[in-house]
Figure 1 (tube, rainbow, N blue to C red):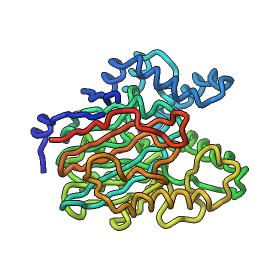
Figure 2 (tube, rainbow, N blue to C red):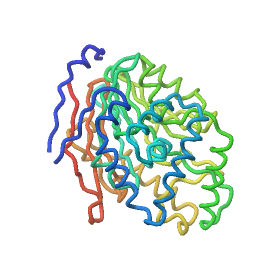
Figure 3 (cartoon, rainbow, N blue to C red):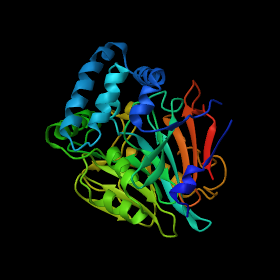
Figure 4 (cartoon, rainbow, N blue to C red):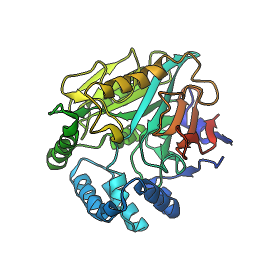
Length: 362
């Protein structure tokens, strides 16, 4: 178990392509010192949309700003300052887009928990523009895998305390035909915008890293704090037995300490919900196919027989590795290890590693 003083003496090393920067301070400083990279990230993400839709970005940014300003977000002032300093549209939208598909596995090795996760999203640039933020909260130092202009936490490790990540939860379905999925997506979005005022799930995770001194406190906060959207958290501590997956709706939770792997569906599945799927299959994928794909990714990682503690990302193989994979992360708060690599699809069938494997170790 390492304390915060030990975290001050971390040996930051990196191996292999461009280095993932280690940035100091909070999101405002991070964004202001990386304006060009923040704009490049915005432009890369927009490249997947038809050019005719890009003029709508300021309007979408304004919708995101209005909702976040009315929500339980404690970081609105940060987003506002970042947007004012960067002076381009998209900052509010970035911070209203927790919807990242992913796969995660928590398990014990060598007497301590380890957590591996892949992050999947169709937007290019998320892999090559990745940073590792070194941030001091009231409870101690933590390291967040992040991007310039983003204030939430999707994946982070606090040496000597805990590590966690979040996955996008399944979608509420009212209508079963594949062609009607966009209708359900719109209904869910309208409900959230019009009625929900709770904290976004990624910002709750940041609060937990800043304020919670232990795995037990982090677990309680993630279980009991009302959130704006359904979410799946995977959390590990430093001691044997400190592994769990927390499945959240806005005001309820279900926690499991066995089968501590997750993709983008409930385990077990629940009626009225559908696992997340790629946008290309939105109108054609029959009901049940998305669940089967999520289950194949979850089991592909859960049944991997190697060691998560081994160097590299040998666990990142199809179907866990897929066309949308942008990040691979392995971490252990007990051993104070955080490994991160960015991936991009560059014309080939599967993404390739485009950054060095950056490793934070004592």
